[in-house]
Length: 194
Image (tube, rainbow, N blue to C red; front, side):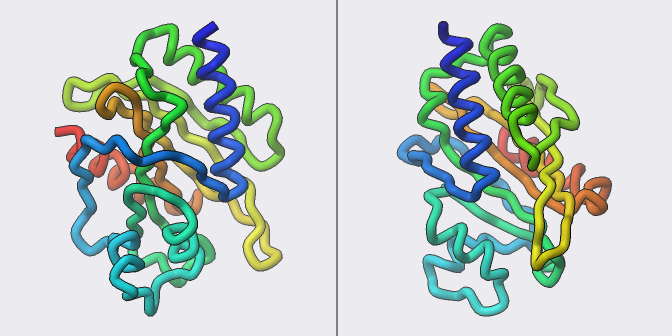
């Protein structure tokens, strides 16, 4: 029964993320989030009304969503799709335990969402241990259209323990930039979970 709830919650969350509507509650926040040097904390910039030169998409996302943190690499702000990450708390995963059964449900939920979406395909789902912490990692490709041009954005989400539940770090970059940014994304999670 719990596995079905997790699958359903993951499907709803992924569909919301793809559509750009993020409806989550950030009351619980126990992680000190690492932001790489040179990256811009867009959440803070928007709060301080310092948005000149920032991609409108990220400014709008920061204003509309209730992400705890949205940060990006300014070197990509002129690209078709900027490289950035968002950290959110997942209320539907409050009291989530990183047990084998729960992680299997998460894996199945993501794969089911991808099967039901023309926009998303799963590259890899796996459970990893980072600094002694069990983490679920999901890599997906998102087929999007930007200014009438089809692009592929690769996204990796790390589901990490946060208080009594889970939070999610989701990173986005153009697929052809994946090799460059994948180690940076992993470094952010590793330094956050230290």
